Length: 367
Ligand code: ATP
Image 1 (cartoon, rainbow, N blue to C red):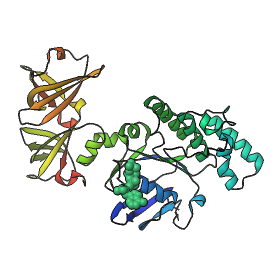
Image 2 (cartoon, rainbow, N blue to C red; image 1 turned 45 degrees about the vertical axis):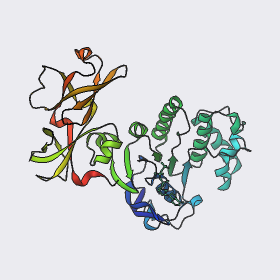
Image 3 (cartoon, rainbow, N blue to C red; image 1 turned 60 degrees about the vertical axis):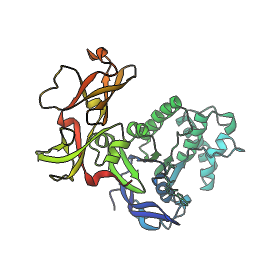
Image 4 (cartoon, rainbow, N blue to C red; image 1 turned 90 degrees about the vertical axis):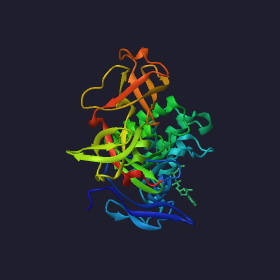
């Protein structure tokens, strides 16, 4: 018996002329919350649809609890699904909508009643059973869709951009509710989004899709701190990049020479002399005014401020470096002395090597 609930083994999907999903392998444990994150057209929905059984694989296989899923039609897979557009039946009441999957499965009438009431309670709509979908707000409709997907206690819940149609505030509230349901019920969730913040907030692991393939699968923290490719560093959070050639590799620290000599934690595929990129998060940069010296051991670059963006609690300083590149630093607003910096001011941005990551040429991503 496999220790994983769901296994995708070299799964591909080709449509005429397009490879939508390219050799994707992924194992998901029981109770995990895994998010598919990637730009539009990167293969997230197609992968989900193959798991749900709405699309046939071109090659590879999918196993649920150690058994091949491929021979099973969607309604026998024990998988619940929630879409961006609620897909509720408009002519049925909320109760009837939620009861539908149970009736399809010929559940006893008393049991249906009880389960519908329980799940309505769970999604916070105990009083809304008799309403029709059009009498509900967008957020409430999505809760009903969630209730309908959960009522038959599926082993896996697939959610495709479920909050995409909601405004920001409601989205954040629903994110917390879905996380709570996941925690309380221990249900396995596969969640699709192209919103990296949503993925970072909600997931235990994130599978980053790029051009049909999986770029990296890791915890939010690991993805953010240790992106394995430029694509991931760029897509998950904001990142600055500086290009150069590797001049030294020592004890996990790489130095590259470009518009200066810059150090960072060495990625896997670096070789002395090869082209490489240093990736540095804006919040890891320190800003020194003219005449101030960066901390000893820091790498640094000089430039002139081209823009200042006020964000309330923090500020963004954008500098045009003497080498011509642009770098963004994010600084807490209470850091002293920053008021004196204005557009045109000379500045030095510096960072500790541990706060940057050096990525090799092969980690450029596919696109
Ligand atoms: P989005 O976030 O926009 O939904 P996605 O990552 O979910 O994007 P998919 O919908 O899986 O991406 O699409 C992956 C690729 O497959 C795209 O290039 C898309 O045009 C193509 N594709 C999807 N469905 C079909 C189809 N039925 N016929 C032909 N090509 C398709």
